[in-house]
Length: 131
Image: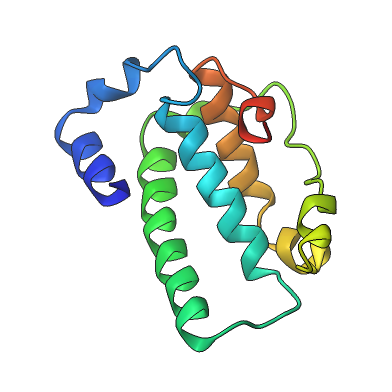
């Protein structure tokens, strides 16, 4: 679905001007949620299986393509009016997943800035991501 969305953006740039009013059906909060989840899981203390790590890295590469496409296009001049919140790791800790927050956030500041700008531009906030 994400690759199809990226392809549609290249073919039909006007797609950025349409969005669902229901946060459960909206593409941008879903992409940001997926990116945030992937980013945090890549910072997990438990290495997990090789297949799981490979799947996360493949997902990250696809998300990287999306971020590059968005950043090189209409987002190149946009700056968010707010900053991304620090993730609440308590729900993950309750499930036995330990995240090294420093590792997870190390390379993500510009990316989270782009995600924040995407959310704001589409009328959403991080509250729609962390629901």
